[in-house]
Image 1 (cartoon, rainbow, N blue to C red):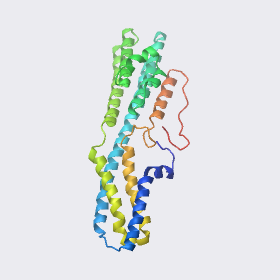
Image 2: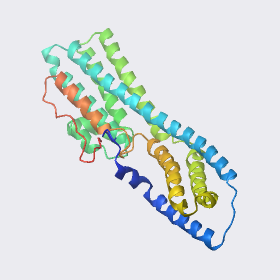
Image 3: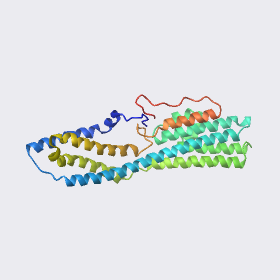
Image 4: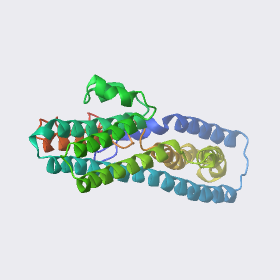
Length: 295
C-alpha cells in the first residue's frame, strides 16, 4: 500500500501509459484526417455516452473500494483477536508448568497469521510457518489444503490440552474458544473476498465501453478543439482510464501489489505485540520502502 502523503506521478503513469500512448496516437490520426478530409461529427452522442460511462465507472469503483475496505476491516479484527488470544493465554496460564504451552500457543498464532497472509497472496507457506513452528509441529498443518485453518485447529487442541491438565477451567476455555471463532470468521470473510471476484460484467463491460469511448472521443471533439484535439482528448481519456485502473487495482485487496493491503506489515504488528506480551524480543516495525510502499 502506498503510504506517502502525496501521489507519485510515476505510479500513475506506470498504470496507464500504454493505453494512453495508443490514445494519443489515435487522436493525432483523427486530427490529421480531419484537416485532410474535413468531416462533421455529432457531439451530443459522445456527451451522453461519456456521462453514462462516468456513472458506470463510478459505481464499479465504489464496489471495488468496498471490497478493499472490508478486507481492511477483517484484518483489523484479526489483529484484535490475536491480541485477545495472547492476553488470555498470559492471564489464564500463570502456572510456571504452563509456560511452554503458553509460548507455543502464542507462536502458533503468529505462524497462523503469516500462513494466512501467504495463503491469500497465493505464495508458498512452508518457509514462513517453519520460522515459528518446529518441523514436527508444522507437518500436520502443512499437509492440509487450508494450512492456516490447520494451524488454527491445532491452537484449539492446545487450549483443550491446557484444560485437561487443569491449567484452564471450562469458562476460561470457552472464552478462548470464542476468540478462535472470531478468528475463523475473519478468515472466512477474507477467503470469500479472495475467491469471489466481481461479476464478469463488472470487469469486462467497463473495459470495453471505456476503450470504445476513448476511440470515439477525438471524433466528437476535433471540430471544436481542432489542433488541440490530441491534448484535450488525451487528458479526458486519462480521467476515464485512471478510474478504470483504480477499480482494477482495488478489486483484490489481498494481492501483492502496491495498492493492496499491507498484509506483511500487519502480520509484523501482530508478531511484535504477541512476542512482547510473553516477554520475548520482538523484531522492529516494518517501514515503507524507498518508493513509499508498505507491503
